[in-house]
Amino acid sequence: MPGGGTYGWVRKRSSGGWEHIVDETVGGTGVTAGGTDVPAGAGSVPAGVRGADGLDGVELRHLRAFMAVAEERSFTHAADRLRVGQPALTRTVRALEETLATRLLDRTTRRVEPTEDGRRLYAELAPLLPRLAAALRAHGGQPVLRLGFTSLLPGACAALNAEFEAATGAGVRLVRRDTPLAGLDTGESDIAVLRGDALPDADVRTRVLLREPRVAAVGRSAAAGALARRRVLDWAELADHPLVVNTVTGSTRPELWPADRRPRLACTADNFDEWLEAVAAGHGVGVAPQEVAERHTHPGIRFVRLKNAPPVTVRLALPTRGAHPLAERFFGWGGTGGAEGRGGG
Image 1: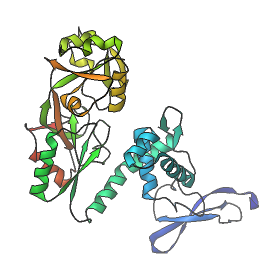
Image 2: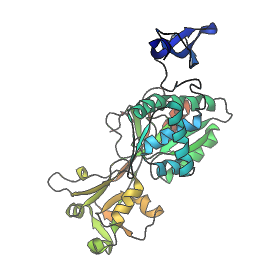
Image 3: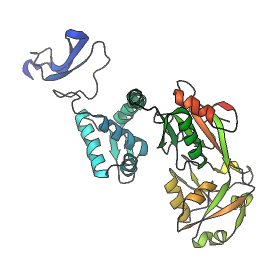
Image 4: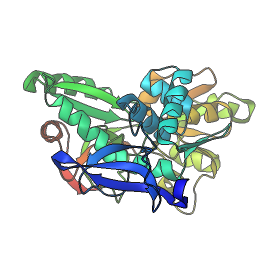
């Protein structure tokens, strides 16, 4: 560098209350390499400022693509969620990384994990993008309520949604997110339908919507063939068989059985599809709401009625503070019981 100075970022005051951040030699000849405008008094230089282009070229689609991959931990699942091709999604995320001059995701053949920079960016974007979407929706004509759910929306919600739309004039947009709070914690949904108990530390209010019976999901393989031929199984019998558990959005865990007689955990799954395939492969027995048997078929699985099984509690959940006004109305609209307070019951 000319003059042997140190290369770094320097703020220069400009008109209109903005500062121009420039790359220059500090203590040398002061040769400007490029820069970008940021609000005066802003914090540290944005990570994406890397020369003359600054953040030029970063679009909302880049950020949404990164967020989807970071949440799904998979380019394939993220592409399905965004309804785009996987090659296009890969190019979009790579373009964002090149613009920011940092790697946001570590990719392996089995899984995708955010880097430290990726985790930081995700944490900053998670509350911002939903707020931007809400601001845009506020000026977009018909009001819309985003109803989050996980792998399967209860059939009873169809009538509830139709009644709500007719009474309020608002639309109800269904948002599937295979996360414990169905997008409620990330701002992707305004209100959510959750099965089982909400996370105890979740900052949400809940109320009971309905209760569903459980059924056993049994693989047709030789190992579980005898169970697959049964017409009815008793809940207590399942303690003698290994259990496949969906740990993210499932509602059945070994802890539902008495402490002295619980099923062994055979394997876990991160989503409904993995759970289904694990049961079909004969890794263990699964337990699911009855609607799964009514609306899903699999050549390798037979659903068997369960007796003496505790029902699955289905709840409506919305944020404890700052809930969307339409979410508050929907929360009071449906449900068989009173509000349960923070975290559910």
